[in-house]
Length: 357
Picture 1 (tube, rainbow, N blue to C red):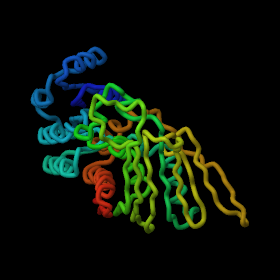
Picture 2: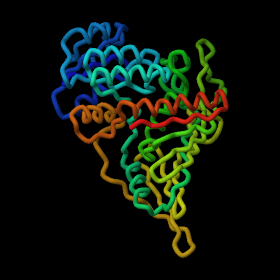
Picture 3: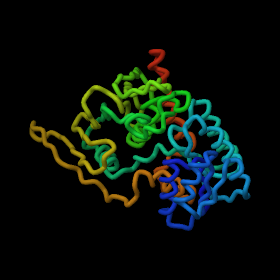
Picture 4: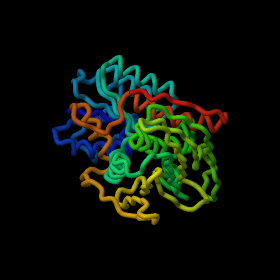
């Protein structure tokens, strides 16, 4: 199998490491116009063939049926390379956020459908984690009764991409390059997890808001117009009915740190820490009028890290194996929900997304 990396930065290196865990021989190719970044990648992965442009890399050899191209550039240059790679006859896995706009995402999907190639998103890093599967098992068992509400909140006071995290990558702070702030950075993981948990046929963004709390560490020498705190009221239409979701995400806030999710049903509730699979899952039910809480054992853990999972899952899909990968229209519909949060926050008008299967 050949894996082509468009972009040779930090995230591309995680995918190069993941390629070594595919369980089959892999030939790496990498392209980046930044000679310094490309040289650093080549020093770390000397067997990878290096190119100064994605165009030269894709044109260097005929496409094979199982070629995988991984777009690992800043979001502003996702769509063009992804479409070109799909038109070259190769499968494409794109870093999150998928694109800058719904129109770009739909263009990528159309290119994949026209080429008959798989197209996926790296928003799946936290899909099918053991504790998430434990939660899904509890819900499927019926012990919660009719599930009517989900609270999904993760707030970190100081973890802003481009400031406290990867401070050299200031492009995170400029919406013209990143597409947005925490909703575009962490929202893809949140939405993919919500889709995994609820398997919706439709999602309605009823209300939404975004904010940018100010700090003494805010840069003044670059554009900083992205949100660091956001929230939304969502309605997920599922096979069992409508589940109302209170969603909140922050990587910069003056509020306290919180990481908690909880399903509530008519006969019980289950709560967990969304993105930390080391933390336990707890089920709360009623027994003779008293609240009873018990820990829910998770299924066995995988040896894969969250950085390994997108490529490994995508290759499983390419090989026709069972996979939690988010592919095609499903990947685009998750992204449409994120863009709808911005639209509703801006206009105050609810947006409904019909989820394609």
